[in-house]
Length: 278
Ligand SMILES: [Zn+2]
Image 1 (cartoon, rainbow, N blue to C red):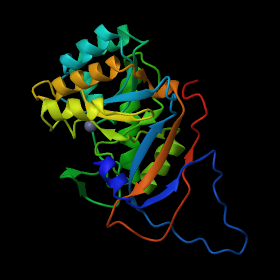
Image 2: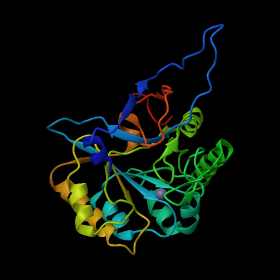
Image 3: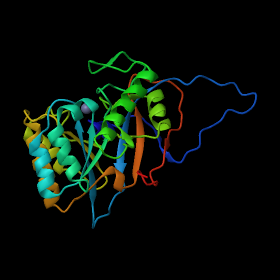
């Protein structure tokens, strides 16, 4: 979907500037309340170049179970991935968590929220899912997700991805002020685990240097997971290197969602060159 919107030239509002300083109002200048917009973040990683192309595989564990087809293939092929997990998925999948923890060289565990809530304050629902609705609830969602990850003994997460990959701009700023980077993506591998296996395999196998792939690792009963495995294997065969978000420089673009337009633009902060873990 993002690919299409990129090709279609969807309004790309602003690139994230590394270490952009917030703009302070001058003395005597009226402070205009910021308009809240709805954005879809796109994330890329640094390219490895023609001789060493690289992609980041990011897998969401929203709730429910674990797709062992994917998890086992990653372990067997020693393919690194970044997993975005919710507190509720962690509680329901202790066996999978044990595998993640047993392979710290492969798996980076990041924050998908406590209860899988869209980080949106300006709309009541997104794709039929009730949103956070307030910054307090966004904060609780992020903190609850982080607490559950830390409770497993994993490192404190530094990336946050909400439930629907759409955010209101005030929620983006809150997450950044809490020390998080917003985990967009550039290639939607499985469209929420909704596509047939062949389509998923084809999409993932088409990933290019610098892409951030998103797919799901929590739908073992759907055909999509088999396609994720096939796509990954095809990339590996082509010599594609897999990297985790914590191991590479990234760049984020916030695309405004059509229909949520207004006139205010606020530079967001991102520091792609900084080491993501301390
Ligand atoms: Zn999710």
